[in-house]
Image (cartoon, rainbow, N blue to C red; front, side, top):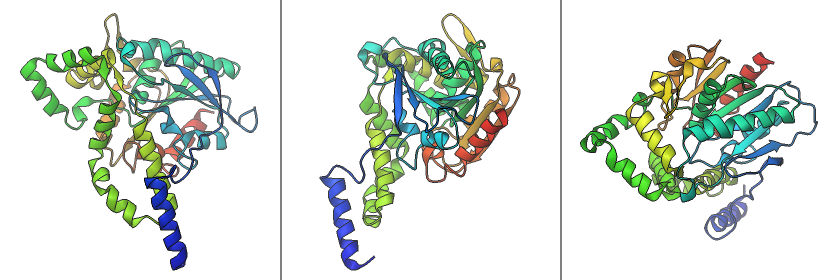
Length: 350
């Protein structure tokens, strides 16, 4: 690149980041909305041919407090596009925004209502085929709990990418428990009830703090890559993802705090709810678990715990890949690692 081209590119990128519309326009994978109700929008990604190479469908399950765009950040960071390219029929359930009006929503809403309904609709849309669930982060936990709680659902397999399956292995949990002992855990739950949940700005702040090294290095990173449009576009896609993070409903977060962070139900292979106990040992389909070497949000040891708790599954495959919590799903190495493991796992089910 000539000096003139370098200066021109640097100026254009600097303007786009500071005052313009961004490095590249948002270009979501083509899709069709099949069902649109609060917290359960169902989207089918468009395929070139109506008949897919597989006789199953794939439902992408996002976590709470993260936008559903995690599966489709940009053209080359899109698990949804990859699934279409490899002959799959991917669908996505999107929970949308979470507000004070949703404060009474809890684990039950997702595990016994939202996700079962989405699975049935996906299966029906493809003529009754079985469904492969792919969940990222808490979406992976949702998927496993849904399969355990609803054995009658047409689920063929479950893949969890970075799911927290043992909170004893999660960073900072021992310190949180020590603080909780001083108040019996009541101060936190009372505050969450008062405001109806964890608002979106706090979830965004929490995610940034978990990746504080990225935030600190951001100015230097931009300066070093000001002429690298592709690198800046990838950075921008993550910034856009963080900016769209919704919050947690109050009841769900209190369950997460009490049943997971304090009692570590999931690490014991279960979830205690008001009217029932869901056991991970009741998952009766093959499972693929992906842990990240550099994942500080869900350390790989917290994912590996599924090898112990998913005792009823006919097979549990555990793979460790490079990358952060988001990186293992859609980072620069995901295509050769996570997506390759997923493609092999699904092909074995075909």
